Length: 301
Image 1 (cartoon, rainbow, N blue to C red):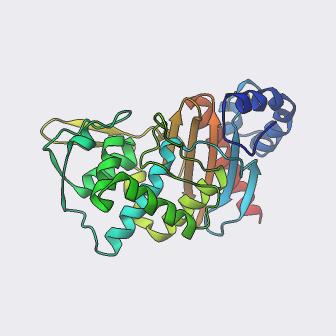
Image 2: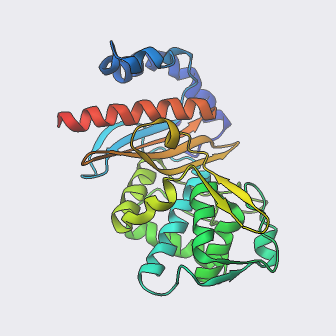
């Protein structure tokens, strides 16, 4: 079973075929602490869930790895790379290079970006902060492109800033080639990372910019008063898991469904990352279990 290469159809099939032998201990690991509780009664039977590709749980306060399953295996993060796009922009806001209320005009390059979007149109003007909300909540690819162009002039230059930040943070298995996480076009290389790097990225982002949760914790928010649209987060744990306040989901076909989820209870903060799930429901169920287990493990240390 090849875990150290990029997540592709062959390695995903190998992961699925090998998962049967490991599901027993995963079931025990995740559900034993919950036996006899209402949470266990409401939980899905883990044996019926499709497997994930890789996963990790860390204590955000200390950086300690609480549990991992091939956390360093390379995979496609998809839209989770928007965390780094935001990191670069928030850094520049803190340095005074950008302003939250500065106007950003939509260009043709921004308008034509596909995938999930907020339908920005050429000539529209938005305060920079509105576009941050559109990226953090709605995962809008057009808004992510607008942030990149405002910060760096070109998408390529912004991707270089993102890579430089990854090296600064010690994310050795992370390489960015675009600013939004869409699948690569002809002749382009894919964005690559791993579960552990994504967890460490989220932890560093929250430490550097604690106010990031004002953006990532919202499940819904209105956008564009003249042609109204409701921003909606694909992170369903914001509405179902106690203490969840972020952070980012990701999906495209070759990489499956992924999530970087974080929750805070009291003084304790946990980050769980899953990459390569076969459905959103599986991703959400496992993320909830891993976060819950993370709080138990952290309290026992």
